[in-house]
Every structure is written in C-alpha cells, then in structure tokens.
Length: 224
Image 1 (cartoon, rainbow, N blue to C red):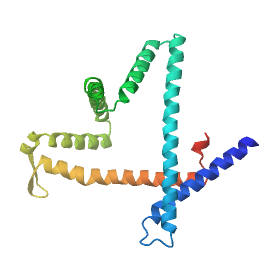
Image 2 (cartoon, helix red, strand yellow):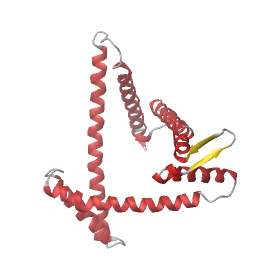
Image 3 (spheres, rainbow, N blue to C red):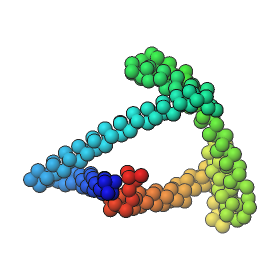
Image 4 (cartoon, rainbow, N blue to C red):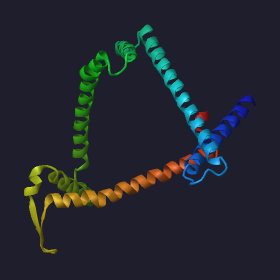
C-alpha cells in the first residue's frame, strides 16, 4: 500500500511540474503581466527547472559512484577485463584531479591535446571506415529501389569534389546542358531536404505524444 501511494505521489508531482513548466513556455510570450500572473508562473517554472538541474547533478554523482564501485569490485574479484577496469579508474581519478584546476590549466590542455583529441580522431577514422562498409553494403543492387538509391548516391558523391564541375551531360527531353554539381544541389535541396523535414516532423509529433502520455500519467518512466 505504501509503494502504491508513493507511485501515485510521484505521478502527481511529475504531472503538476510538467504542466507548470509547459505553461511557463506559453505564458512568457504574453505581452502583459496580468496582475503578476506572468511573473509568478515564470518564477515557478525557473524554480522547477533549477530543481531538475540539481537532481541531474546528483544523478551524475550517483553514476560516478556506481562506476567506481562496479569496476573496483571487478578488480577485487579478478574478473575478466580487470586490467581495463584499472585503466578506467586511473583515468577517471586522474581526470577528476586535473579537472579541479580548471580545463584551461596546463595539465587540462595537455590531457585534451595529447590524449582526448587523438582518441577522438581515431574514433572518427574508425567511424569513416564503418560508414564506407555500410555504404558498400547498402549500394549493392538487388531490386529497382536499390538501383535508384545507388544511382542517386553515385551522383551526389561525384558532385561533391571539384572534379564534378567538369562533368556535364545533355538532357534531350529538356534540351539543356547541365553540370553534375547542379543536379547534386537539386537532390540535396529538394527531395533530400523534404525527406529530412518529414522525419523531423515525425520526431516532433512522437515527442509531443510521449510528453502528453507522461503528463497524463499513462507512461511513468520515473517510476521504473
């Protein structure tokens, strides 16, 4: 019974807080103050957002403590991969100690320039290889749709480098001479942009639907 009351209380707090923050987003656009209502709602919304930032900070501290505990236990019990756990803990503690002096300090700049930046470059290079492999697999022609996909990808790839300006072709139906970069720009600015906007609209509608379900108490991610 206590657990049930706790879940109900958490749901009520989440719904009320979400409604106040959502109301603040609309009320701040009002031209007048309406007898102090706009200022009161705005202050309450800022207070709730500040509390959320504090809770997020404590969640980061709990995550830090959990990482330390899990990997320290792995080292103590000599589980497989304990060496990597040791490297992770040493890196974590060393970065934390250096971070107290600020990211602009000499040691902080050394960590960024000598360790973090080369690691990011390495992962970016690996990502390029994975993307090239995925593109090769995706452009294998199996049916008519894959043929269209491979043809459009080929046109865009050829139109990107400077050599694409020298590639021209005739369209007898239209009666004109076109450069490949012009067709590439048309593909990127018309059909690709339209598809991107459609995906963004779908994501926005899904986000709104998810938010409404949380505000109505149908979904309770905070109770999991």
